Length: 286
Length: 210
Image 1 (spheres, rainbow over the protein chains, first blue to last red):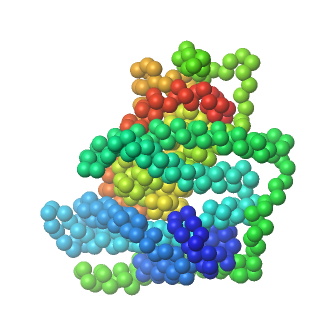
Image 2 (cartoon, chains in turn blue, yellow; image 1 turned 180 degrees about the vertical axis):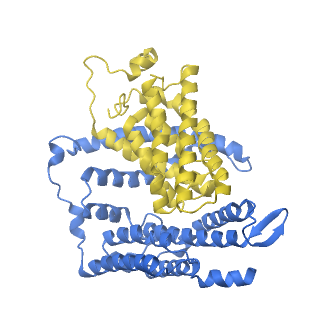
Image 3 (cartoon, rainbow over the protein chains, first blue to last red; image 1 turned 120 degrees about the horizontal axis):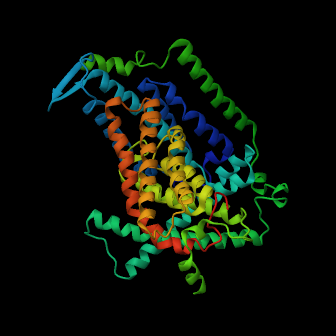
């Protein structure tokens, strides 16, 4: 199993045949798709495609569980925002009135459109995070020739996030060993104690920064001055080659995006008025 | 022990002032501290984003503000840089779309920059010795969060068509309250507890870059 940024993926997963740059490119471009697509059924289709990609990539689908509360919370907020506190609009079509709240068709429609725009963006990000390892992100950054220092900071940041989580566990266990127990305590109490975790976490990180620096200096690393201008070997890149199918995937992603823009702005596709689902719902409610 | 005595004797002016003959330059440690701050912010910010979500990366209690503002006070531009970058990661884990996170950059930049600027401009003591130190820090926290609260829901979320005009106050107050309350809980305690140590480390930044 390979540890990705969000879970584990089998080493034999077909996703590892693809160059990391293609995955980064996919995330950056496909995240834009929902911004140009208003019709919810197209965004649902995009979500299904992303789930299919995750399944093909052998991503552990249980990872998605942590996003259920996020999806529910966002859905609730959008409904509250659009439908419950959407204001009074005599120009809109009223479909219900309860507890003094006017529920308008236009507000319900907009809430659905926005929600199904957000979900595929989240799925795209989850797909990227659950299939990419730290090394993949570094390779993608090196492939597009980002300066070494930028890549290095990025890589160290990802690595240190894991260390902070470990430190957090250590601090928590140390507190527990001293008899500290939050079971049955109020959220305010737990929050107050959370402050006590932050102080040792910061202190540990400060100490670690000096250890890191000493290790880097001892190995001759420098990010400024003459030494930093020496061309690096980019050893990690030698493990990856940009194959013909990577070029095909990159071209396909680009062409799909261009086609989407042409269809959207040239032929008015993917608009709310063109949506089959929205038209069906309109007939249902009105 | 002698170091502790020295730090106790140091005034706020001495903390921020470069002494005659003192050489300060950008070093590997600043790069390392930026990376570590991004890492801490990633974890701490994601905790707030997942535990108290309001939606689209806006939270009722965003713990990441502590890393954003304390990091920039201690480490200057490196802290500001980290404070601007790490929300990308923490928001991503919490399910915020990439381009929404990208549009939050100005808000996160100001939230990190303003406390760092007031400490350097007004020569405040990061160990929070006087009421003036507390007062100006609080003002910077409130003002920077107010900018973030106005920028993000008004410009970003409204720009992306994610919010209605009627629901803006909920998000503006959510962002503002979520940041200021978390700042009140963490910033003062962290500065008070750790500044005396941090100002003696080579990572501490007196000016902006070194």
